[in-house]
Image (cartoon, rainbow, N blue to C red):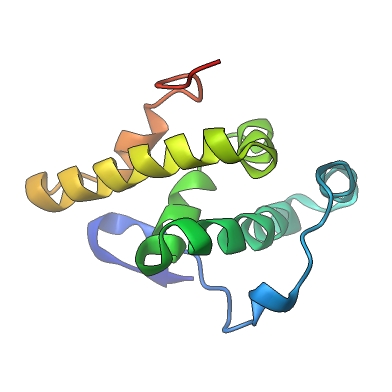
Length: 122
């Protein structure tokens, strides 16, 4: 990962061609996470999340991935399995990035204050 403006960490996917990798079913990902050491769990979540974000916000996919990986693991899993929740959270993350660039605040701090249930329609 590389350090970027505002103290945020960008999620570096190492140039892997992820579009050719089929997504892991959510139950398989949850099982793999449970069996993985803590230091690998964030990487595994990022590898599942990044391709989805790349489709929604190509230019900011790495930044948004890093921001969303600051959330609790169950919330990130929910975003991976729920396209509507992911889209809503990406909109929030992009708002945070825009506001942070205008105000000089840390986007990670602003996103961390948001709840998974904010702005979601059930």
